[in-house]
Image (cartoon, rainbow, N blue to C red):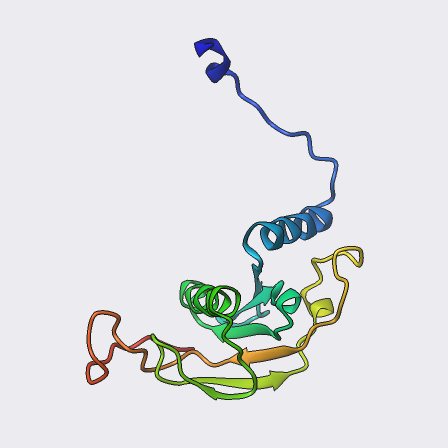
Length: 154
């Protein structure tokens, strides 16, 4: 059976780029319970990163505007896990988590149709959206509340 491992395989894709993005988002939601979608703001160094799929847990979708994609993705992965694994509920206002002393959420009219990547067949509802500001002072994971580390925010 060693010969079988030497084969190269591929999948012939008949989907358009738009359909493939929607399918990938749908697959991420099925696999992890949420997907993260990034959108570059035209003529700006800023990027928007948003969750998709938290609406299935009856939770608003969360978006972050940041200068660095990695920071926004890390924050949203953390928040999505808090929602899906720990039952944490975020809404407009100020919240505290075990890692972040203060997270500020604002209501926004940012809608799924703004993402322009999901087909109508995939979206079954128009979820609510809240926008989270990147925190300046997250708690250091290995230190007490007195010691802080800084994240460069947009």
